[in-house]
Image (cartoon, rainbow, N blue to C red; front, side, top):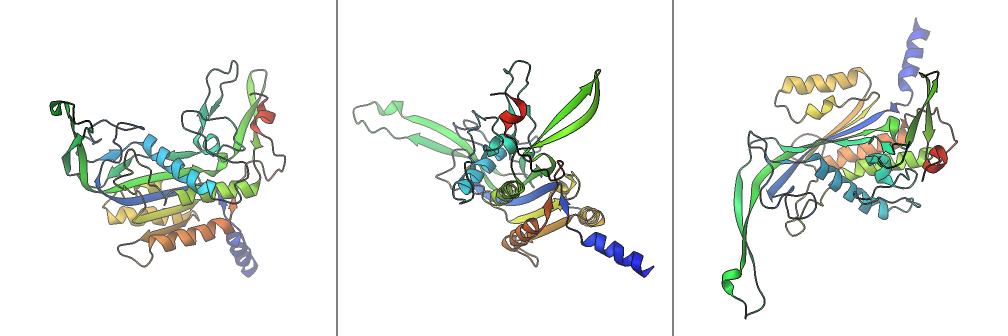
Length: 323
């Protein structure tokens, strides 16, 4: 019996095979219109609200801000090699170099018999206020420099802003498809096998996972907000390294039911997932400490690899023979 118990202990001491990384955040935003502005992905004058009066930021905007943060981080990384992040309106299929193509997916429908489609390993929920928002309006005047023009033609506009919100946002990275492509083998019209192709080595997959995690606490590039310095940096965070693909922990900060929160964490413990909670307002661990411990854990564990560790690395073009 003792030998059996020791063998079980050794099994549990093995490194985790991380299949998913989930980051749930609460970020305070004051006097903001984070999903507004006349330019990139925004509204002209009104702030987005749910029917119950809570301000929200679209998932599309959340992904834009995350990839913008990731671009800044990647550009300053001495190990970036030839990697880059393409613009959202011109995503390549170079999974081996383009981080947006890898993590954000792409759709190239005009490729003949090849669909040119990749499902994104990185997903984001909308960011939504935890409580009903108080929305005001701001008068904007575009001053004219030419004294000879008619002052009656001054450009006037009003824009909505939200006074104070605790925004709950969630991000998930599917490690099982990070830098991996899936192919299928058919015989006689039947699907008989699934194969996996790795586009980068294990060290680069780990680096991209770290970039994703670091980006979730570096979000600032919201629409038309440079002058107002709107920040999505977390006040509270829950970081989950999971051995299955689950997003249930997204509910943790959204619920006010303490029993539900306890049960969410107990479920993670039960299946051997590892989580880190940080709170800058109360609690034993700050957000900075939670991220520091999470990076330490990520660097010490293994990422799940559906290719079983094969070192036959292929570019996307080599794998699929398409431009």
